[in-house]
Length: 122
Image 1 (cartoon, one colour):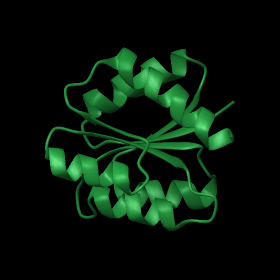
Image 2: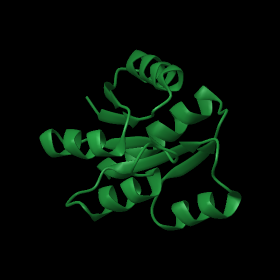
Image 3: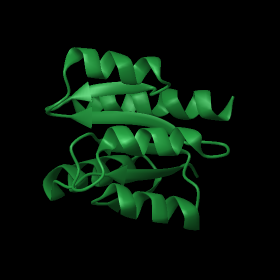
Image 4: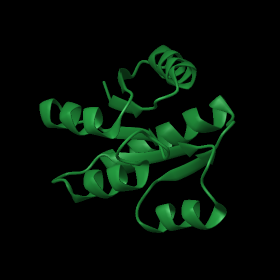
């Protein structure tokens, strides 16, 4: 069962992501900061990390860099209400599978999750 780590400090968004993706059969862990995400990844690697950009203390861009630097890094998807088009394009150029501006359509995100996990496994 693919393991997904959700990094989102907005509890309503985290809950919606967690419920929707667990209904699809994924093993979900949700945390509210980049520091907690890195600690969770040290304990148990994830196949996919879905992160917000605007997080307390360490932002999502730094989290993306740290995840990408890990041995056998997780696939990455970014969701944000604050990213500019240039920022989002830059993240995709840096290896982020997909970027979604908030509010996003859950069905599009689910398809992107499926696609990211297929690429990760291949």
